[in-house]
Image (cartoon, rainbow, N blue to C red):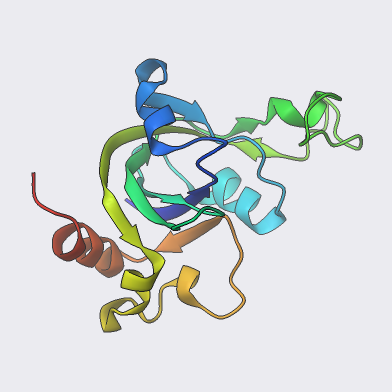
Length: 155
């Protein structure tokens, strides 16, 4: 099993939106970075753990837990001229952008970016590295355990 941090702008898809979706599952559309796409296409597996991260908002941070819920498939927004994620170079025969479905598991109290930065145990976390802007990043098993066992309240 692998672990990931996946960023979403809450005004686009929040943890609440994902929890309210049918099957608590949303397609992770709109990724337009090749490395993030390659993570979804080549490395993610159904059942992998996801830290659902709210970005580009007043207080960015981890807002919930989720899991990868599908194998990769073409992102339909690349084919839609009305979508802000449209890619005129993409074709049905040769799609450029892939996505996975993500199933929300639970909402958690927000763990702000400042809290993540303050933890020595998370110093090597990709999202905390200078200049890191990727919307999808790997999380080590140790980082996952620390976040879920030390920073998230127990149910």
